Image (cartoon, helix red, strand yellow):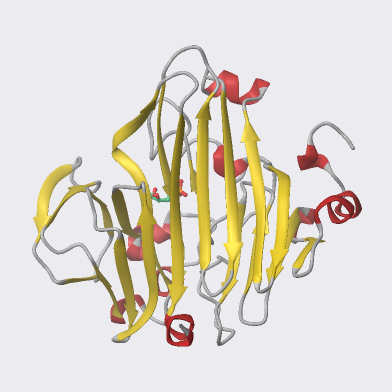
Length: 304
Ligand code: TA6
């Protein structure tokens, strides 16, 4: 087996990690992906950026938005699904949103038990990452599909000095129309407005609706956030170890400046991004950080 599993062929990945309901295929751009499938749901995750691009809930409905113009190529993030933000959120000393989303993760484990399917990806320090971010780390991400879709993160500091980082699941939720989409969980929270130089304000609304470009970091958000589509609950988000949540929609004008979005795409998604953003996470040498996000869709919740 070649040293870097991220360069394994589909045949080698299958031989090493295929299980019942855990299969590998060649996806767009010839990039390898893993398909998780059980009696109720399915998910697709590319090894590139360990990026989920599809999650179909119990009724077969797709819950993630994926741009038709998404680019599937090395060093390019996929527009849609669940891109990973690490070690930096947004612009700054490093490339915007860091490097975790645009380089290959390798598969290190998989499992199938009853209706539960899981696959674990790993990204560790490389020559390339050291140039961008001169720290030794290991990150592991486990996607588990059962009656919900769970993503569990472990980041370890393998360096002799402390590391400080931000993390976010930059999730694009598919909606029928942004104009009839609302998000519940931000009432009374302080948010930093990325459209006003991170000015702090309080959102007093019981539910957040979107009728213009929105780009807000809600600080110390509740661990349960719900997205409603035309008044009906669409997806429930449960987060652990991730204090903040970003609400983003580019609306009309910003969408025109995003090459891998078509002009009307903004109407079809809302980004609710669970992360550790306002106050970066600091890890002492040898210590670890764990966090998780659990996504449940309405139909799945009714199934209990
Ligand atoms: O999460 C919101 C945000 O930081 C926005 O400011 C916007 O830049 C968005 O992420 C998408 O960023 P990307 O680098 O994927 O185009």
